[in-house]
Image (cartoon, rainbow, N blue to C red):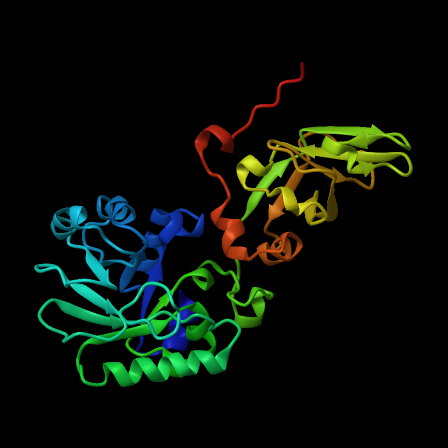
Length: 323
């Protein structure tokens, strides 16, 4: 929040906390953002907004996704603001008209008259993280279309544009992934003055020695070429540590070690350089191990990885029983 505030100047910062705060905990993130000056919260659905409204009665909350007619009454009662990307403008509720300038997803082909109840005009950039030329084209289309509506709040910038395209900041910027210290460009967050806030930690639940020719995990994808110590971590793809993260690195007692073999539903194997005790700390994300690194190994983006981390209490705390 402070990094963004120092760059945005008079532009309002609206914190995007959809998908449970990108897997970080929507309520915790929302509270921190509001305390540091966020002027609004953005979610994907009315249901997500209700969860925040119950705890944050005074917050300004904008629903970015489509809203069904059956939710309009409840949205009015909850004092939500809605995004309109097709159809008629619902009466009696603040709305933001969304113009499709090149995303090819939600959005109006052209703006209707900004009548009573329209408090915002918005668009969504398709490639602010990788194609500045097309992003500027979208911005030009948006500015031209919204010029006849002075005084109505205009917002277009996402995290990438807020960081590197100053002219796109307009009246408000909807900051999502970078608000969590993650890079919208898939690079080291430090390049843009960001520091990841998420840590994901576990421990070694079992340590065993594989002799030459012995294997660990399904499919025998890892066969020891020599006597090797293996540490088993009680985290797997059911928790969001994806099956395609074999080969990535984690920290074991502060040292980088490779993930080997097949990631299981509830366990992952790490090759150790020596025998270690059960309970030795393991850092899956944090302390220099970046979500962006894991994303490159998995062939995906950091958004997907952090949104997929399971935080259900039944899985968060494990008790390992030696049978």
